[in-house]
Image 1 (cartoon, rainbow, N blue to C red):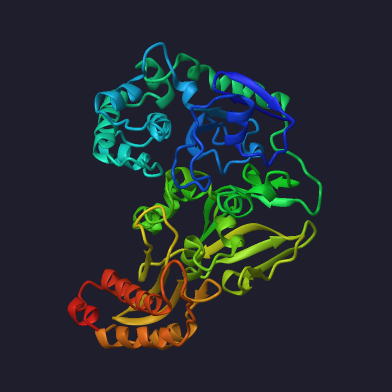
Image 2: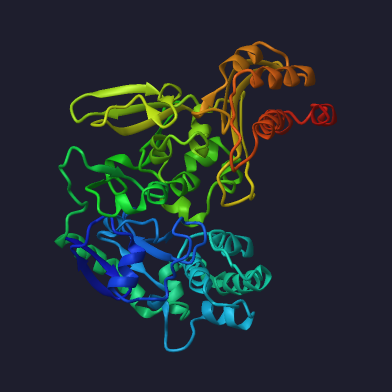
Length: 471
């Protein structure tokens, strides 16, 4: 039995655990404010809030309910737009009204929920952060400037918050209903009466983390499948440093990485990289391990961690097996992994003082889109000589690829414009892109060359940019 709090009431259901939360709240709870849009997590019309106690205190994040299985709602607080309604319009809704930010109205609940999530987050109450909070919401009528002005109003509402907890402040300022202050105690009580996770001993059960890609690919198949949920397994979460290595649980989300002090310390550009990857609601539920096992040739974090030469640990329930990420992919969507094995750990060496890292991505839309080509580089430089280099690329082969020949060429070379240009030429011999919806073969070859140049331009500003760009 799946049990959780939906808005201000406890609910339970024996529906298949793979049922999308969106379908449950609309068709079984008749809460129609949450809209059905793309069913792929792109439009944000189905955005809800998810509150949990996994960090020891109540934490809320936004999620696209079309991609969230009921099993991942177990023991949590799910909030729809009806759950933030008050006697009059709440200040978020009022801001949307005052700025004429509603046109056809279909997208409005999603925008309101994303801004409510911003009010319940610990992010600094800046206008830019408020606008970032709605990066997963699309208005089909257009009119984003009025929505941005509404977001600006919401940011100003939060300015007096100081050290008050987001929930207490939002309730105290009548931004959100008073019942929110009872949720932490109610979730703690609920947890005493339910299992912390849904058990499934079926060895053939489909393993699901965040589900952000598998629900797009196999929506009808997954909703009735036997599922073993990984998202809330404590032993698969966490980001920690051990010596010069970083250890990541595969159920850690992209947002977990964004909020990690370790990642921020060693990858100061990480926030800029993640702006190119999906949207806030997707990053809140997408797991790093899921990105690897999905085996997409353009998986953004697969490309990121390939350049870090990450090592994976698999378990079959009895023994552990280590495998470099670069050796995981045998062919298109083919893995060096047995059905009974599951990913338990990701680890990699943290960058040193002479190490430089960069990630680049090009897609049809700058944000909230899958890559046409993406690439990452991790190199160590001493006295202007490259002593080691790892270079990865996606969208240019059937698998996420390490460009080994190019790495070999660059190792031991001084950094000059000519060396970079020669490297781009060698990279062309290692790839086999195909023409598809994201670009022609010729276009993808050109993109990879430009991304390799972009790595060096960003990491070595002293290079003559003009010489690189015109060739």
